Amino acid sequence: MITNDVKNVEMLPSLYSLFLNPAGRVLYDLILYKICDTEYLVEYDATGIEYVHKHLTMYRLRKNVQIEPSSDMSVWVIYKQNNAGSTDENFDLEDIYNHLNKISDIVKYTQDPRNNNLGIRIITKKDTNLPKFLELSGLNLLKTGCYQLLRYQLGIGEGVLDHPPGNCLPFETNVDLLNGVSFTKGCYIGQEMTAKSNFVFSVRKRLMPVIFEEMNSYPIFPPECNILNDKQKKMGRLRTRLGQHGLGLLKFEDCMKSNFLQLQGYDIKLKAIWPNWWPKSLSSNKNEHIFSL
Image 1: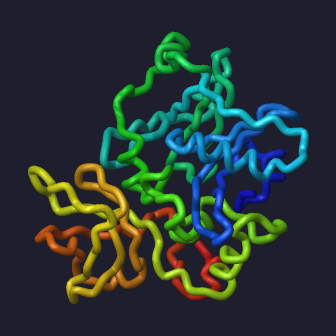
Image 2: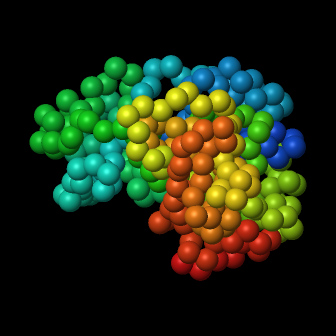
């Protein structure tokens, strides 16, 4: 049912993947955790709870599997702020893990399976005051920060806002660069189109971080507003924005060759950023999954 090889969660603490529809379009992104031999946890955008539950149940067929939404858990993230904020040079994973081990209300914690810059993802019982527990255990962390802004600066989408269900192709979400797809597993829903995109078709557009020119305030842009280059050619669309930072679905190679980008219908310039976690040799040819760092 998912793009990744579910067997890997037997060896790894968590697994990133996508639910696709039969046409190979992205429905929801998810993180899978193994709680014990008979229990697994699927983390996804809470706005899709009804659909995801229906989707999983529909494909249960006659298997003796119980599938139910869980409303008694909360998700936390501990991450190192980048240069856009105050950097904590003492970010020690082992030290943080030692403190987390002392908290009984934690269901699961793991380094984010997509990208190390996203920090540690923690699932606790609902209403657990994790910052207070960590402070009492002797670990003092900054309580301020914006995880959404961190993702936008990195160019990593998440949930239905960044990946509109039924509209995105898997590679447009950078699933191959975020450890979210297996090219060796068996068939799954939407697998045919994903395989063709990898081995036959060109992948010209990917989700990228964009930075707007600094302004006192920004207008409310229409959904999927077109982004043009300096020659007024369409480079892609603006997906989401938070302040000066946002995500754009863009022709990543062409954007790097453009003098500047701007929103269609607005005298507002923006810049596309090549994420430092992307391979330097990444290209839009049909063998792009074969790259070197």
